[in-house]
Length: 250
Image (cartoon, rainbow, N blue to C red; front, side):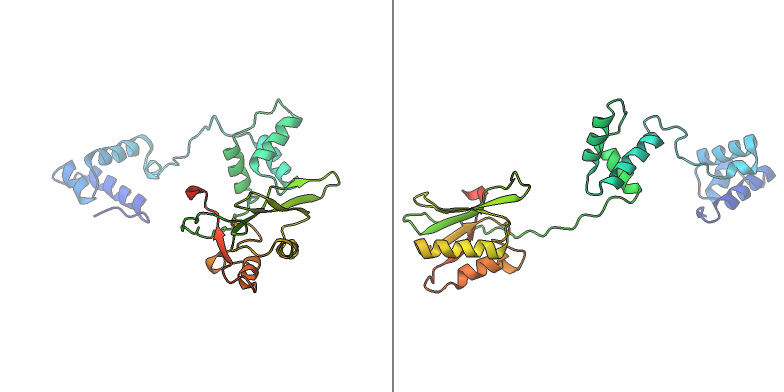
């Protein structure tokens, strides 16, 4: 009969009692009756002889000493710094601590992350849905106004602390820069306003290429955003379409 977890200690006691009573043809037979191996049977007999019934209880397998365990005062420093700066990750927390006290013996970034996680200071990341890329290859560009490329060329902070988002619109055939406009955000309204001014000045292209960033694409069906929907619905340009930039096939 196999030993169950809920009454395993009682079964060990019964096994020892039967062993001491010698009411069995052989030790192998006795072990077989309890569903254990002969070495396991000898192990519990030895433990009973050395410490009695109390020695039949499983001992904790946790290590008695952890030489590389992070000191409690260091753990508290990491937690306190995180509480002061809730949006900092473990790497930034450690960098800041070592900057103010280079003598500190700090753990690895991953260990600091586990310390913060145990303290309940790490929020679960939201899953970011991605739009599958359009795997259709780009057609050859033979004329101006056939394909335009639109993108925000990075972002940077101005001297007054405000952010600048340079919106660029380029003719993909001539490489002529149709527009380079500094904007305060990547909002739909700002992008549409300057796209409309560019259309009025240069006309409508047959196609517009953009990446999957805001406001050009979304996680909606087909990756269509408000801006790209407006492009498609523009009158006087029935061939206007949206092409997603795919670096792998360029």
